[in-house]
Image 1 (cartoon, chains in turn blue, cyan):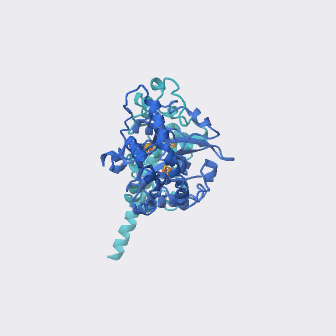
Image 2: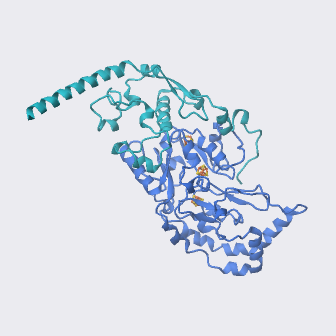
Length: 310
Length: 173
Ligand code: SF4
Ligand code: SF4
Ligand code: SF4
């Protein structure tokens, strides 16, 4: 892994901005990503979820996230609406559970986190290669490399990546990492999965989970809609969902293509070199403002960065 | 020789049936009034489950015990195979449902009985069964309605004495 820091990157891009702008964007990634047949995933069976938020509490603890605004047994969060939308994962909460009230049915709860796509749009859209899809199936990121450009935030079809502004000069991406460094790489069940009292989630090889999911549908046809969300969407995701109500009624985007987002992102990436041209100046400005009269310590060490140990 | 064998087998079968019937009566008449469920206690205290009360309120043991107690099977999925209503040697939840969290590998790998795959682990077996019925029957459904939270639980949920001290500001721009 190259030890490029944000500042070195900026210095480099100032010196050689034109060269970077001309460099080909990553077309090779799609091909790389098909090589993980034993990738792990999680099957989320929403018919079992009771909205207890134990999974949110477990993630907070496992990932050493900051104190939440409200206790994890405070169910008023289900009524929160921001910018006309229900809660989404943030830099302080890598997973959130939302409540939906489909007509003529009991409320349904949906746990949201990174879906660990087979061919992640976040990864493809990142021009500094901060993201990695590990053979175990996790999509992780190196926050020492991230420049906070937010391409991934725009590219992700599930609105997952969030940004930490706790360090004004070094905003970095924050999202669910499938408990990669503490659990997944040792073959262990993620913290949120283990904490759930209802076994809403099963952890295992993605291809086995797909079989289990279809078995459940076949055994209880009245209970489920006949679809495993994530089996095909955007080229397949590691985290898969079963539902008792049509997926759009539980807030899912049902208009996603079954091909990976890569193709669309390529168009989007075309505008990146243009942006790059103005960035160095912009960031230098921010940097000078932010560090005016302050020492240089970034003071924001992200201990759960799986890539650092490589 | 063949005849003797047949007679012996018939006698043996009869004996087994008698034993099973006796066990059936035995199983039906003597069940524990209270069961302490504490194998998984950590964030919550154990539960002293009023088994007697629930026996009175449910229509048959099979509502919870599937096909193991000798009363008519209610779950149509179990009933595909278990129609003979024979009581089994093991009836308690923990004898069949693993206290280890299940994974896709353990769900499909270990149990040799094909239709017993995808079996919930013990924690889920309790919650799916208890909470599912409590929801249907309008019985209490709050976590602490059944088990009091421990101090470790309060810390885990950032609640009680560990509640957030004040709004830490809005997040997510
Ligand atoms: S869900 Fe979004 S953040 Fe997660 S891997 Fe897919 S594209 Fe990336
Ligand atoms: S897998 Fe780990 S990081 Fe992701 S939501 Fe669950 S506990 Fe959090
Ligand atoms: S812990 Fe399980 S039941 Fe509770 S909210 Fe999370 S997924 Fe739903």
